Amino acid sequence: MPEGIEVEYYRTTALRALRRTIKLVTANDRYFLKGETESEELQSFLLQDEFVAARRVGKLLLLDTKHGMTLGIRFGMTGRLLVDGYSAIDYLEYSTMRNESSWDRFAIGFEDGGTLSVRDPRRLGGVELNPDIDSLGSDIYGINGKELGVVLKGSSRPIKARLMDQHQIAGLGNLLTDEILWRASIDPRRSSDSLAKDEKRRLLYHIKNTVQQLTELGGSHMGELQSSRNASGFCPKDGTLLERHKVGGRTTYSCPKHQK
DNA sequence: CTCGACTCCTGTTAGC
DNA sequence: TGCTAACAGGAGTCGA
Image (cartoon, rainbow, N blue to C red):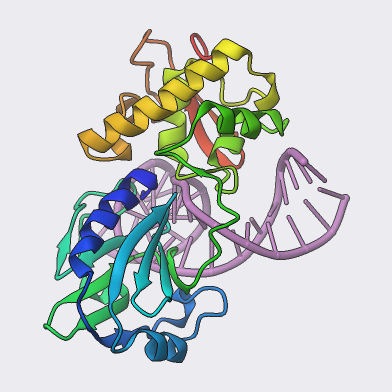
């Protein structure tokens, strides 16, 4: 599913949509409009305008217009971004390989004939005008030890739930978090404030390293743990049968032998 | 503060 | 063969 890494790809794709006059806004799926955003509002603010910047905070893609508006796009679990029919990502874990235009929940047409669309089979994504980004935590691509320290110190929740909380750290999803904790040899159920100094350092290293590595490899699903993330999977490090739990309401796989 | 339970959504799949 | 129920999880709400 799209996590911060996938949305970073989408951001790169969105660069193709900059500096092109918007001629058409198709927002017929009202369910896909979030917050106070209305279709008429999108029309009046976007038509005749153009995007001048594509930013990303966590899993949220932000397209700034010349006139000072910001279009926020969330992709939920199965959303893709297409510009001129091109998608940076063809394969999405837990989504489908089928690719139907009827799943376009939101689309923009440019004066030059091109398009930008959000194709989301399950409609868990959404579009919002001027979304709140201040409540999001530090982005995964730039997080440092001090910020991670604050995030961990402030909570007794399970470490995995804390890491996935977008208000604390923005961009980590279920797969990435399982992968990072597995690499860092930390049990996902550990309380956040129980980590020792060396464990925090290790965790930071693996957040940065995993994000960078999987960005280069092509996505959140490229982790070493991924192929074993199933009911009868074995730990790629030591061969132990992986355990499956619900942590923070999410399906979690971890190795009972080396994740402490 | 924390938690579980529930909601949204729909394509896929396990099981009968 | 065909149906159904469970599952996937990002994000939000609610009551305890």
